Structure formats: structure tokens, C-alpha cells
Amino acid sequence: MKFSAKPGIKLSKRLQQIDAMVSSQQYQHIWDCCCDHGLLGFALLSRHAASRIHFADIVPELMTAVEEKLLRFYSTIANFSNTHWETHCLDVSKLPLGVYQGKHLVIIAGVGGDLMIQFIDAIHRQYPNKDIDFLLCPVHHQFSLRQRLIELNFSLMDEVLVEDNKRYYEVLLLSSTRNNKRKVSPVGNKIWGALSSNHSKQQTEIANKYLAKTLEHYQRIQQGFQQGKAHSVQHIIDAYTAIKP
Image 1 (cartoon, rainbow, N blue to C red):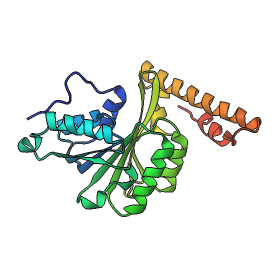
Image 2: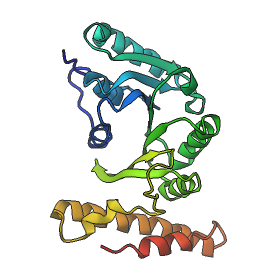
Image 3: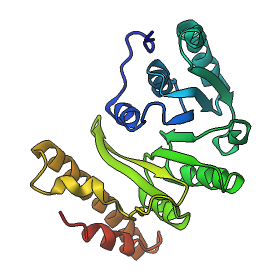
């Protein structure tokens, strides 16, 4: 029996992309962190993407609203499938992963890469040997996030560039184990594939615009460095300038 997410609400392109990168039944537990209004978790719950979908956010009002919707639309879902849900009002760095057996996917979206680093560091420090995948979609500070993922020796499983409402997002699927030898790139690899002639005009335009916007951002910061107002980011500019189709 299929259950629909809250009527009248559709996932944004960003959330659609994140949802599409979650393989159904690969995980026993999926954590929708910083879940806001819970839309992504509702979609995952509707298609029984895991045995248990966890909704986590530190804002009590948000979690109360999410739980009310879950009780209204998904209160009987466990009666028709092996899918269950739970809500957690807590800091993402304190996810109780050790309480639950099985493979975990931790989804963190809607926050900056700097905050993601804090969350991932805390989780990895607490569960260094636990089989955890991460699906990340930072709103900024992508370069520093990637640098930290490299330092942690995370393996890249997939990465996608998506445009949503004139904003650009990198979505990264990673493994905290070392089984996959594919390394994380400081600036991304697969996301720039659309710069080649083998992709659609729309995909190429998205990649070109995102690259130009990223370079402009760091060039402004570098100007601040030259004026004594910021740290040098020339190494980041050089890394993005070196991107080739």
C-alpha cells in the first residue's frame, strides 16, 4: 500500500535529486537531519526506502509539526509494511546511531559545509567503525567540506550538480568505510562532466554558470585578502580554474 506525502506539496528539484540518490532497501535506517518541514523524509517513508526513517532537527517547534503530520498521514504505515518512523529533537552531532543495528544513511541538507563538518566529525568520532553512508547537500562552503571529507578518507559513491530556483547545489553520496577506492575531489569531478559536448545544452549551461559563479565568489574573497581583510584563497581559485571538460 502506497502512502502519499502531505497533499499539495511537491519536492523541490534539490530534494528530488537527494531522494533519487537513495536506493530503496539498501539501508535499515535513514536519518533525515535538519529535516525542517519533513518533506524529504515523507517521500522516503512513502516509498519504504528503509526499515526505519528518522526525522531529526534541533528546533522543537519544527519537530512537533513534523510529528503531527506523521501521526495524521502515516500513523498506520507500519500495519501495511515493514517501514517505521521516529522523530528526534536533538543536535545532529548527537544522533544515537549506536542504539540501532544495521546499515545507516545520514542525510544532511540545508546547512552550510562548515556546520556539516562539525556534525560529521562528531558522528565519525563517536562511531569510527560503524558502517555509515552520508548524503550531503551543503548550501555553501563546499570546498572546505570536501577537504575535510578527504582528510577523513571518505569514499565517494556519487556526486551530482543540480540547479534549483536559480541556486546551485552539490549533492554528494559518501561512505565512511574504505571499501570504495574512489576518492573525493577537492572541487568535484563527476559534477563537471556536463562541460563536455556529450551532455545536453541545459546541463552544460548549469555547469558553466556554477563554475563561473564559484570563481567569482572566491575572486571577491581574494580581493579582500589583498586589502588585508581576509585570508588568501588563491589555491582554491587555482583548483577551480584548472577544471577541464
